Image (cartoon, rainbow, N blue to C red; front, side, top):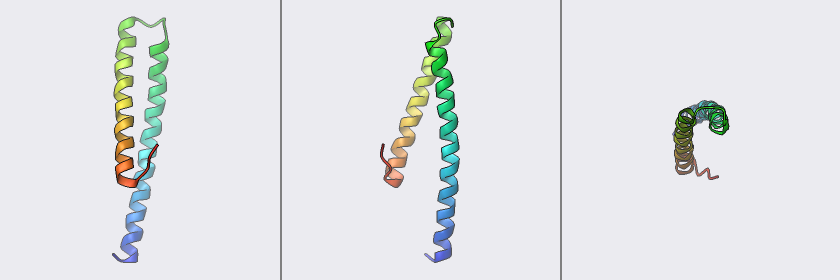
Length: 77
């Protein structure tokens, strides 16, 4: 691999990492909003149950991303 190819690969990895970070931040904000609904006793039970299901799906996504990052880059939490 030439130096130019390595630099290109590093730039692509950096850009994809920034995109992943943006997605992760959006997911965190969504998770906070969902948990506010889950914990709001004034909301109907059905809405709170659906919010809890969505929170669990997000948590599964967080877990999957963490496992993929660990396998790909050795990043561990």
